[in-house]
Length: 209
Image (cartoon, rainbow, N blue to C red; front, side, top):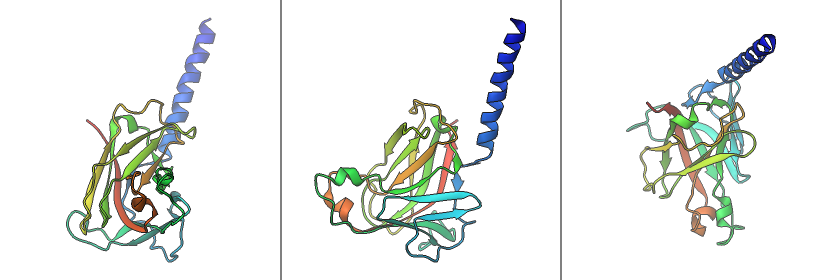
């Protein structure tokens, strides 16, 4: 019995070390895109740097690492993530809700402390509306979605925050990922079918104290 208990204890420790090692291979979510190269293609669905990948969420989305168009106020950095959503006239008033998830997604970062953290980022959005974020615990589609307050249209950078503390039901695994949604006003057809351009920068997961 003692040997069996030792084997079980060793196995649990080993599994814990594997889990820690797996998460250690991923960087904490603290991305300002300064290490990324400027995107030369105007039809890119992916930007990447040193194993870090940001991928479009939605076929009518394009992503670029671009020059910061407004280097004033709270964001004076050089590079930002530029998201362009094409006009989509096939969307109807009854189907608009099914298009609110469009934006950008990544699984490249360590999200293991998500249940005690706030994810925040800076956004430049010249159309009033709401943003949303989904944090997926794993590859099995378990997620928590939080929606921002109504943001005013602005030529200046704004900060949005999503507090996931105590909201995540399933443990966050190494397959966990996030989706940033550009427009969550699902009951307005115009907010989903119209073309839209949004800039995002300094995406961080901050552990709550």
